[in-house]
Image (cartoon, rainbow, N blue to C red; front, side):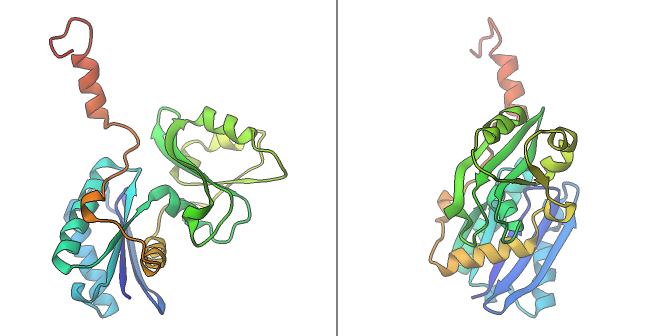
Length: 243
């Protein structure tokens, strides 16, 4: 089963190719908001480099967010077209699940943190690492203030360590580093989702028969776009005819 993994939820376009033999190749390149220009070309480059064509694909895995609103829309629209044309299954993967999966075989609590701006993070909580990463997910994806996350972690009892991973590590390194909690920060290499991770985790779930209908494959923004929030603030202010 040949599976293509795709993530465009961050400035890095991450692509991976995985089958029963393991990882066949990956592309991880910072595109600076040029996903729409390079995504298809990078997919073609990866497939050709590994000696395959798009017709050889048996499944696709795609990151559904949270993350860049534009990047998620581009990846999901591309994937929906591909799976309809090719007639193959697809599985959507949370970017927070993928970040936790980055930390292979960690016995500690895994806390992915993606910077959501204004001292807020997209986060979830995993009690350990497991290939079926969803099965060890203790708290679902959400957007909360970093202060609230730290307060919730402080309530967890027992002799444990919290391993944090994601771009929130660099964005809030001073706050996290000065916390009295037993926090370990992932290295820079692990704070970005790699194509190999998307493809491997997608391969695992597709092999288990886990997939999503393309009509139900939607981006998980967790919060409204800033443009929409600004629009609501402007037109729902007192006395506006848009109230």
